[in-house]
Length: 168
Ligand SMILES: [Cu+2]
Image (cartoon, rainbow, N blue to C red; front, side, top):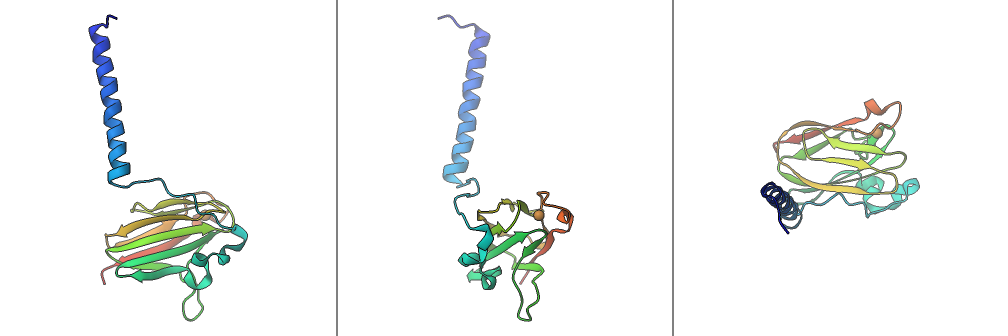
């Protein structure tokens, strides 16, 4: 079979870029460990309290180790439930020491919400019936905003919470 010179150039270019892209994806997946957010964990949206992570006393920020935290959040129109403080008032912000490893685990009781901490790589969809989780290191101090980026109803634009990453 005779191939024209230009065909050979294009074939080489095409196969070369395919190998390059597969290599990039392969390094990302197998060496750096990136993976799509898990959708495997399910939950009854009518009864999220039945799940240990979303019981009243486990909501919000929990210290689980040296510099390791879990943040459990139940989203609902139009609020992120972070649990209550000692006086019984709803906690309105998340305060994390800089450099901590934080596992965010979120679910919702009603409709689809977003869970984005603007300026970080934390960005998840929150779907009824599922638990979404993402682990990250909060390594830049500052004041961030946790916002809902999925339109969820008339109060959508009020759905936000402050996240403070502070130097201890
Ligand atoms: Cu929302």
